Length: 540
Image 1 (tube, rainbow, N blue to C red):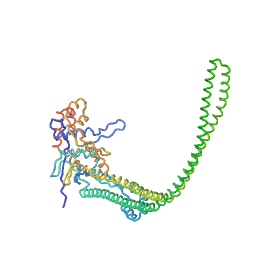
Image 2 (cartoon, one colour):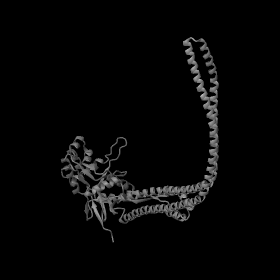
Image 3 (cartoon, helix red, strand yellow):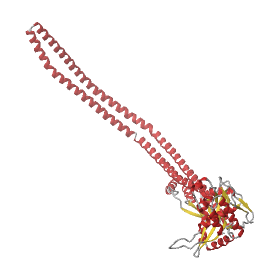
Image 4 (cartoon, one colour):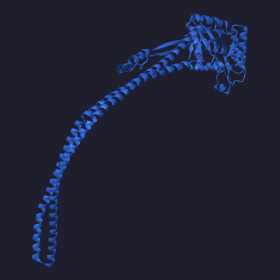
């Protein structure tokens, strides 16, 4: 059953918001005729004179644009296939092979660790890139935006348009449907890739968690096993270390007592010397006092006696001071010897204790070494897994971005059925003996003769271009491709020439009369002068 296709047509010219005066079809045709004639080559040039161009036709044509519903949006397709859009598709590495490798190696941790190591960069880069070209698909944002705004002025038509050169789509419904199927297939592939990446990440994460859990259980077993051995050995080691400690404590005590006795004797002798020093000092003070007393009494005999005694006492002091210093050195030497001998005993004690604890220390070291190895395995598994998942996550983000971009193609405006919209334009053909030349006048906004236009001082064709202003650069760029298509495709050129001659706005007397009326209306609004009116009217 044939698909129902709604036919839509858009107006060529729409009055600007500030335009108050009415705008007629006659004015539209007259303005286009004026521009076309102004753009016609007049054969200028003195040395290499170019031949004058002949105006063959000015035809109002309709450029086909498909409006296709897809997933709640409306896609735009160029009916003549001039436009196309290429979609790039990144190819994922073989996820199934990766999953099989992970699952197959999970039976032993050694094999799993090797598998992770070998696949550490598996998802670092995509396996390649595919490109899919959708003929006719229009994705230029400016065109889509301007065309959607343009649709607010659309009219639905039921009868065929006979007054215009309607360009038949070269891309038909079946090709459009095939393109839609390709887009849907690409979207499904993107969603499938995202889903497969998610499942693979989940599988990898779960498998690693299981391996890590097993390692934690092994660590518990190691602790339990070695703790039992340590507890078994510990009482014997503790008893032995206590015996060693007690033995050396006794030795240290004996050494301390021996040296303390020596020190007591030395300190005792030193105290004796100090007492002697104090007595001599007291005697010196007494002699000095007696000498002073004798001098006061002028007892020369007494003064000599005490002076001689003072001298005798003073001679004893240096010897006594030396004895005290010697005694201090002996005390210091004994204290040093005590410290050294005690230190040596303590070193021997510590060595013997360490020897006694060697079995315990080795058990503890073995336990910590085995636990550390397991912990390093856990860290390695986690780090490698995290790295691979990050790579997969980046690929997932890329796929989601591509999927979102695909979902944003077209316009959010919803349609229930296919529609064929017609973009109006005027297509002009010029001819010389050598070749033909074509020109497109795109849909326009009709301006008003405001103060700004008057101040610009524009005249002739420049002024007329202020009257008819292209409504969209993007739409104009697409319609200008019609000129290239006509020049490059002889079959299409013949078809559009035949249609253009039949639909020319100058083909009948009635149409020419309408153009003349339009020229007068343009003159009345001061878009053209009286002389231009007469000149262009004669051409009709």
